[in-house]
Image 1 (spheres, one colour):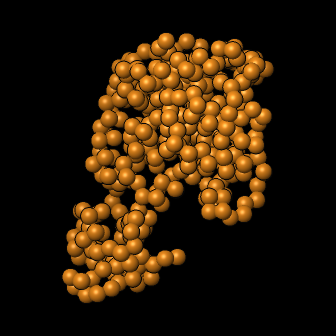
Image 2: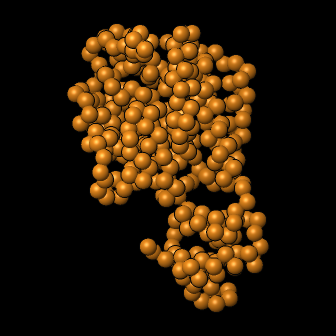
Image 3: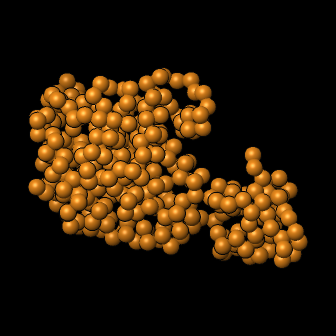
Length: 320
């Protein structure tokens, strides 16, 4: 059974704009993020998604946890971060169209936080706001086949994956298949679906935009719930993706200072030794003289080491 939603002019315009942005991102080779950028933006994604659920840890604390450093904070918050790190590591092994993977992801995400992690709820649940029931989820006995039908739609639906991934996100929130962790699972599952189609989403933390517009996020869920269709939620998520891609491309196209260029290059270059030509392949609009000045400044600051002269010159990144 196909979930109910409409594709209107606003959605079509957003799809066109996002498709153009994804093409530009691929042209800039942003679909192949460096390990450093992937790590940095995964931290942003984890922090944003968990803060929406009330987690208090900062990006700096989450980075420290990833680096196996000791962090002071509520044990529950630390456990949530550890679980989120584990589930993102597991993403390449998960199939977004199977219940088995879905339950496995929830088991990892909620380990040590609730009883029954990795199992569908066995009782009725509702979302209460302001003393009133804002949403009454479908009966527990319907959950397994509702999720199965949802993944069948994801697998066989004809609409663009940007729409199907968003519909899956909304329907997970609507079905509320677990006693806790449904919000995290909805956002995680959309991320998983998008990564498989567009690798750029490996380091595009559009959840930071959702966090910044958290009231709008919940309003879109509520309005879609009341209308019986996910159309309003689709509009909201596509706008968030469009905004996030705009920010990403703006960073790539802005005018860099010499310090910006060196900092960006050191953060994204995956090797250790490189030449001036390699540097200029990243910053195509600068002259050879500018590139030489950038690299000399980096040598003077002990960020890189120079070896050889003239055509035999190469550079090596200083390990910290």
